[in-house]
Length: 171
Image 1 (spheres, one colour):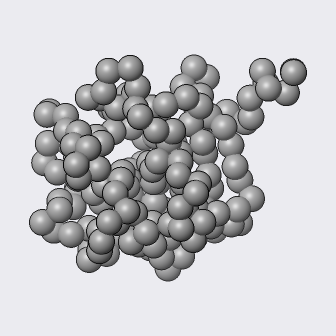
Image 2 (tube, one colour; image 1 turned 60 degrees about the horizontal axis):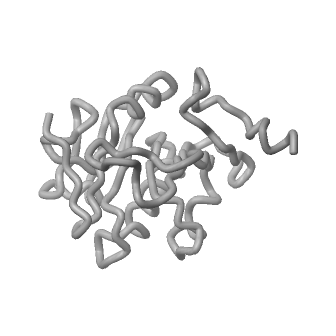
């Protein structure tokens, strides 16, 4: 499978090891932002299909283009993820840059379960790690908004069940 990164269009393909850990917790069925070369699920929506115009159901994975530009910017992807979960049709697991200073972050991320990733995610095609911090935001119909925030690390046996950072608490 070809890996794809293009800083010009904000496409960063999800590392397979990372997606495999997500699958242990979430039975992902649809990759809503994919290409045939980087799709993580058997069912996926390509740029030509325009995932923003599709109906999202079941367990969806979203690693959107990371730009803030135009009709396909982050605000629109986060809105679609939030709304699909609020309608009760989907659980959406979003891998996004932890850009807490943006409008799209404050409009949507606090309405989901936020899991900050310790360090920088080493995207498949980047040597030495990504150029930005990442977070998971999980939207589902029965979430108590803004109540769950975690730090997670890949060194833990289950990076997605890790609660807090014991090193920080000890200081």
